[in-house]
Image 1: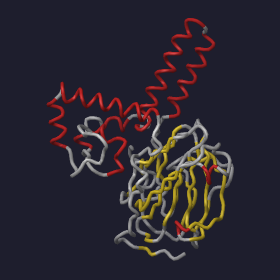
Image 2: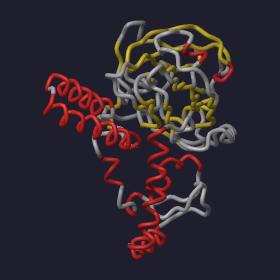
Image 3: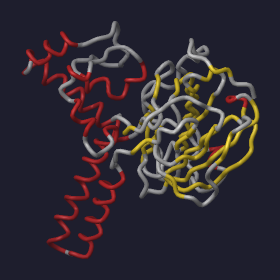
Length: 329
């Protein structure tokens, strides 16, 4: 496959599909609760904090409201940031500190609700049957552990392709995928409930398309899950190499039924930068175009970390880079 090394305009972008109406197109109970809370919060702000609302409106940017509700502050666009519309610069966002927490911001609702419920059960059963209280306490710690969001040291070497997910390599296969131009290599990664579940960009790339498909929720270990389960495909085009496209597939599992992807067509992600999450265990696939000089550096059974483990290398690349830590989501 011929790749043109360029620094000009990217390929044409695919429009955002109509079925992707939020960063979490599959919805979910916690998302519904958070949206309902947002309705109450907006009523409170307009009635009791008009000065805050006025200040937020003064700093709000964008030309239109892409959300299905009124937008008063940055919290209102959380689930709809991939739709365009209103936004705030980080310096004007009084809630930007949440991006610096050691937990995934898109999972804070689950962390608070599930963690709080398990904490309550722990306290209650500690008074009546302490062995069960220990079980609830461990489950609560598991929820906290699941939604952690550690920083990663991103490799800077030219040609490196980093892992889009934490987990264990379960497949390295030669395939044909027209999304990347034909002959390709597929690398499958299984994420257990103990892994970090944030997804990261494999290279510095522009998003040229998103494709969402509803499906089943088979165990992510099974090969059939890659074909039949609910999934989101993120089509990347590497910066500086027009024609080199890569696909990251976020695949739901038996427990993980909520795919989150907040990046949109036209946006650029740095190598190792966070762009999404799969909540509670799942599978991620990376599809790389088969080119002369492509070296696959992993095999089935290996454990990898998103953003820091190098899965492959395009030896012909001479694009400069430097070590960094990927920024917050």
